[in-house]
Structure formats: structure tokens, C-alpha cells
Length: 407
Image 1 (cartoon, helix red, strand yellow):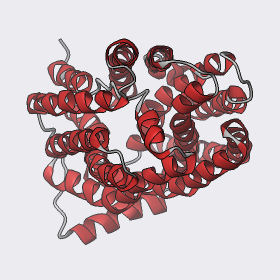
Image 2 (cartoon, rainbow, N blue to C red):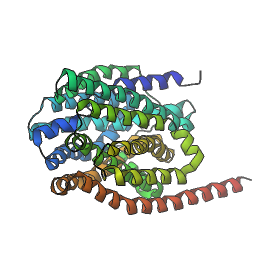
Image 3 (spheres, helix red, strand yellow):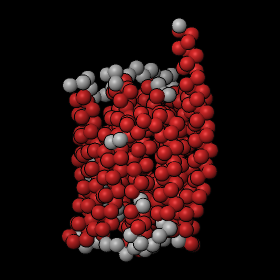
Image 4 (cartoon, rainbow, N blue to C red):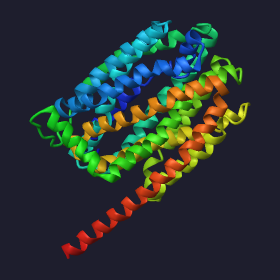
């Protein structure tokens, strides 16, 4: 058994137990049923994203100061409370407030998750395996979520008779109980240094992002991928139900299949990154998602479901691959803080895109809105990719010069 295997397995268990999300296919249907508006559906999300804007960086600072294990525990507990409150809510402001607690939990989880894995692997001398380990973690999560989605579809259609709220309530109880698995994790000690104050810590983290063009480009590129997939996910279930006239079980089964396919793709993340390298890997991700995203809502039949599979493959691949590239360029003392800054940039951009998308969907329809988003993301993605190519070439040149000087 390789050093750290037991700790990695404990992390996989934590991911599995806290990922049983019966609500995944149905949370937007629950909100839409109570709000009857795409615009209000996206506006409810403003509570989630504005909380992340305010809290993600402080959560990252706390993760770097007090450790990954503590923020993971607090995060899963808060997220569970938020999901429970969401399932019990029927009014706009109730849903909005529930999203605040849900978001605070996600802030803590995001701040502790990948830094925990990278620091653990660094401690046992296996940092190069990060992409592979995270890919397997995504695969574990996808299998559990796929089972949850199908189970939720069966229960909602034939047992609960369209009680979408129960998927949220029961998932929250399972998630909060599963928080106990955090206690099985061992806090990594990868040489984090103490800062004089949070202000100094934040300044150092922001300096890392601001002075490294490679890190900033990676953050922005990941932002393009994640925003497009998230906005689609907001409209996805309502589109299937309203436009394609699918019942709860087919919706749950379809989203379960997407999730499982994404997890299978994630298992190949390490191999894909090794085969294509830092430049071509991102190109493959971008081209795949643009092609699929451009047609996913362009057809009004079950083909709209089929063409979503590549989107999920990209979504599950991008996190371990791009996360690996970022973590290679950040030291442990700033890792959670940089993740927090990255999430802050993401939430600002997503809020600026999601709410207008909801307004457009009310005005012209979801299919047309998705087509506009696909067209808009294309030049931005390729522009960031061109800068990334220059950064990779410059980095290789610098390494080559250093090697020659050693001889």
C-alpha cells in the first residue's frame, strides 16, 4: 500500500456519503413551481451568489489559518441546513434566505476540498497524482449522485407524487448525518505558515493571483466553462418538464445518466492530461463544450438530452485538470485563499450572466437564450486560450534555461 492510501480512501468515503443528492434533478422544479418565472428562478440564486461574493474569500482565509478538516465539517453542516430550509420554503424570500445558508456551506467546502487533497498528497510525496486522485473523487461522487438522481425520480413519480420538496428535505438529513465522515480525515501538515493578520494573508493571496498571468487565465477559462454549464443546469429540468413534457422519473434518469457519464469521463482526466498536455487539454475541453452547448437547446426533442452528455464530460474533466494546473502554481500557505479569490471572481461573473439569462428566457425562451450564451462564450474562450498558450511556452522556455544553467 502506497503512503497516504488510507487517507485518500477516507476522503473518497467523505465525498460519497455527502454526495447523495436526491434534489439534483428537482430543486429548480421546486423553485419554479412556487415562482412560475425563469427570471425569479435566477433571482433566487442571487442570494446564493452574493453570499459567495461576501464570504468565499473569508472562508478561504479561515481554511488556510485553521485547517482544511474544520472548514469541511462546518461547510457540510451549513450546506445541509440550507438545503433543508430550501425544501421547506414556498415563498421567494424564504427560498432566497435558504440559499444564503446553503451558499455559506459551499464556501467552506470549496475552501477545504481541493486544498485538503493537494496538501495531503504533498505531505506523502505524491503531489503529481493530484489530477488522478481528484478524477477518482469526481467519479465516486458521480456514481453516488447518479444513483440518487434515479432514486429520486422513482420516489417523486410513483411514491411521493411530485413532492419535489421531499428530495431536498431527505437529502439534507442524509448530508448532515454524513458530515460525521469528516472526523475520519487527517488534517494535512504541508508547511502552511502563520500570517500576522488576515489582511496580510489576503494581500499575499491576491498578489499570487494578480502577479501570475497563468493563474488568472486559468481562473477565467474555468469561469467560462462553469458559467455556461451552470446556467444550462438552472434551466435544464424545467426545460425537460415544460418543453419536452417529461415526467419526474425520465428527468431523474436522464440527469443520473449525465452524471454517471461525467464521472466515467473524469476517470480519464489524468490520462487525457498526460496525452494532450497543458495546451491541448484545454482546447479539447473548450471545443467540446461549445459544440455541444450550441445545439443542446436548438432541438425540441429527445435529441436535446443526448447532446448534453459531452457537456457533462467537460464539466467533470475541467475541475481536476484545471484545478491541478492552478495548484501546481500555488504554495500551501495561499492555496485556500487563492481558491476563495477564484470563487469570488466566478460568482461575480455568474451573477452578471445568470439573471439576464433568466430575463431573456422569460422574453424569448430557453433555447434561444442558450444559443446566445454559446455564441458569446466562443470568442472569450479562444482569446483566453491564446494567452494560456503563450504562458505555457514561456514556462517551458524558463525551465529549459534553468536546466542548462545547472549543467
